[in-house]
Amino acid sequence: MSVGRFSTELDDRESKRTRMIPTPLIGFSEEDKQGTLQPHDDALFVTLRIGGYDVKMVLVDQGSAVKVMYPDLCKGLNLKPKDLSPYDSPLVSFEGKTITPKGMIRLPVQTDSDVVEVNFIVVDAYSPYTAIVARPWLHALGVVPSTLHQKVKYPSGGQVKEIIGNQGMARQCMVSAISRRQNSEPSTSAENSL
Picture (cartoon, rainbow, N blue to C red):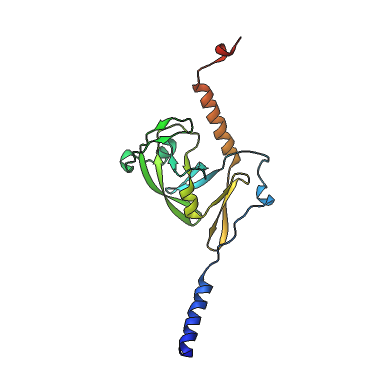
């Protein structure tokens, strides 16, 4: 091997090393709790740019693989049935009811300058929130969510970016869901009286 060739190979390896951007370490500290009401057990709700619009009340659900869009968001985005692709696998709601989706739509979800294409399953069911983003979105972007700190962090361009959650939205959604459930359940007060 000639010295010139060895030098060129070494230069190539060195330039490849310098071009690689190390993945920043993502973590949370006590400082990240500032601005949140503690202690709490609130879900994590964020505002995301979906399909070119800022969408509030998006639930970050790391326990689900299904990204869901509810009727209010469909109407807000002016989606029509013809915009949806067929999707015929039934879903089970939180209440245990089987729901047949209206279809599926692929939309860009933008966080700052990062964009991930997401397949949303469109359902015609009540929800106090507009959409759910789940593990596939989290993994595609490299998101690390923290309900305790009410934020998500993700790597982008060699730095850590964050999206701050909204506890007010989380509490509003919980109250809405509870009051809807109470209004839809038959009264059992006569049955419970002695």
